[in-house]
Length: 425
Image 1 (cartoon, one colour):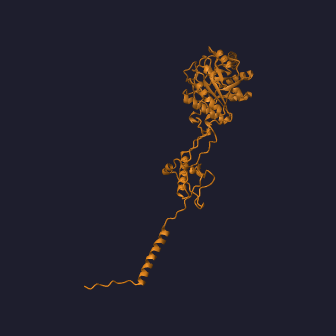
Image 2 (cartoon, rainbow, N blue to C red):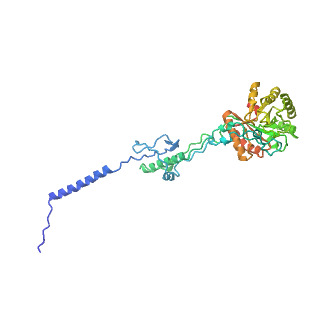
Image 3 (tube, one colour):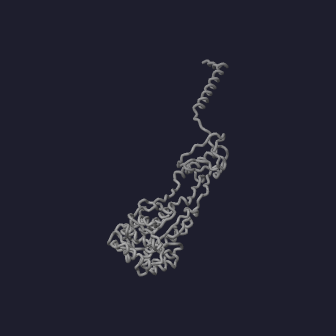
């Protein structure tokens, strides 16, 4: 069979095909440009800049904000994610060391349930102590709330703010590495925590005064000895009519401690025996005055007195008024242990134009070490608020003297002043 001749394309046809191919290519190029997602230029971290999270807002640690190659686009705060936190290792700012002002008090802070701690067992009609002497036990919480609960504890930095700081710093580092502006070492994007403005030794207290009163001396000298060795001023309250009353008072004075009469008084619960030489509800005012003078002569010289038990007597204005008359005549102070929220001592003192003192904290209603420390911290909160705190404990309380002695150096470093009642004037 004869071969068919191949059909040759003309130049015109070749030109048309070429134009069509070029046109199709141009259309695809335009379409890809129009349909491509827009992207803002990534910001570049300048060398030496740092991001520190303050209150949840990212700020430049060096004062120069991060910028893109053109310097016109501000970086948006990055949300903390797990991947960001993982990436931030070695590049995030270390968590600032807690300052002394962030130390949680107590107790300090302060539980509302414990803020009323400090009334005596006599006020509730029960003696809770198994220690020497009837009615010499710890005090129950039937009095008015102690002001120590008003101390506010500083909170620690929130974990979420720390996580956000970590994420922001890691984002800054990742952006700098991907900007094409050159390799930046991890230190250039690391936010270095500023030095703490308050060290642990900087005083937290502006000279607030702490007064420790130790009741129930007179049963023996062995229990008293640790309190006489405390290296600061304290008040020793001595019960009258006991085998070692006068001897305990003399030992306390020799040790340089302030001595006061711990005057026994009848509790609301009449079955509770407050001990020898106590003021009873059936006494006339002149009998009360004579009894208090006799007890002062046994324990004295003293600079003041406070009540032992006495929730009934302190709530009787005529009876407590007779005690204040002796204090005024002898030029000694009265410290109301506030074993009863209904105490009439403030009204009786107002009638006589006298200044009296009031207990703020009972330290050892609960005898455990942690409980005592918590009550001391409540006392610190009271002192921070009103300038001083009067805290009452008992010499039969095991470990109380040792606990206070352990805390003493740090409390002095914080600015607290240890003194006695006279030091409050």
